[in-house]
Length: 111
Image (cartoon, rainbow, N blue to C red; front, side, top):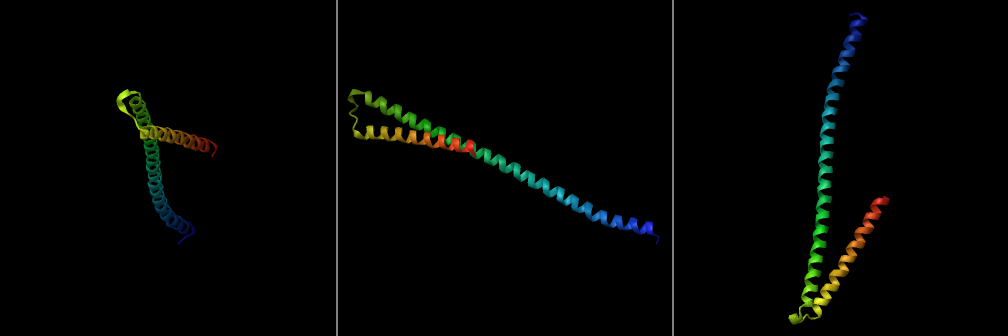
């Protein structure tokens, strides 16, 4: 065997395993990037769900406050202290929720 053929066979022997490993790595990178995209989608969906939950909680509190205030204006309703306490409690919780979300928003902006 001459030197040229020996070098050519050596290069071919080294190139085939490298090509196979390159293909395997390429496929693994594709799978990893797909999982990352799926995970990002799931995170976005969870954030959207949390926003909807906060909005529905705010809407429920607003509805409860409006109902309590409307019932208090009815002369024959005979509202006891429970209605006033519940209204005060709902208002307090609403303000705590707004303060918490405001703090979280500021923390997110600064991080």
